[in-house]
Image (cartoon, rainbow, N blue to C red):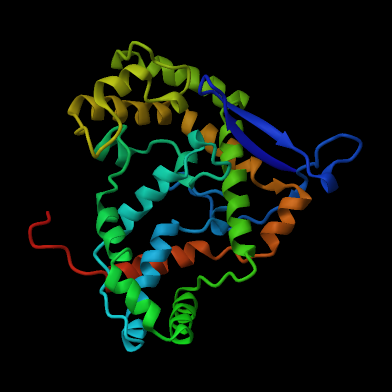
Length: 321
């Protein structure tokens, strides 16, 4: 069974069950009755989920780390164009902005399944992360440099291919048959569906009522029934959510910090975590086969990418804060 999400014109997320031919018996969807061994330890503070180990890191971060790693090899092949500076945080922010459920992405970035936490509330309120560190303009200009492209055209294609293959192996990115990508998409899809469904769990709904009572002093005029619907329309209009165009305000941080505190005191956060975690302990036979075809090693790969970028990326200009 493949479970996807679609966005209705009203903006309401609707779950749609699409039965695969081999997974439908007498018109019923394939049951989610195959147990999955969690790929991570339970940890509510970091919001780990059973399938996290299969979710590949941000694509932009993988590409950037690979370009850094293969520079010496390309230089020997006659292609000497140093990679511009970028940061892991900026590259991840771009991925989060691109992989959204609102855009109809059925396997959105894991950040879209995780509730606001105390650190984010304190540092940026309800604003999204800054994409400035991705240096999108600089990377684009570098990638489209006519001289760089000419150097690639003139170089030995065998040598260039060897450089990229070495980069894949160094970073552990090789996925020639696509099994890791398929497992990643499955893990992200199921995690998002579980996160969405968990909000309707009886214990979660009951705790949300307590959260709402706790939030009353914040004086949010259109306070929603659940934390999952924050920021509300009035909060968005008052403070904005794009950190690149509107500053984070103290009043916004105060509301966001109360939001997180009320999630904890009402029991909402614990109830939501438990409901989502338990939903991901069993999957369909079809999804289990996709996951078993790949090793849940992506958290290790992600840490390797971060370490590579810290080690090899150019230093920030002296003018940067």
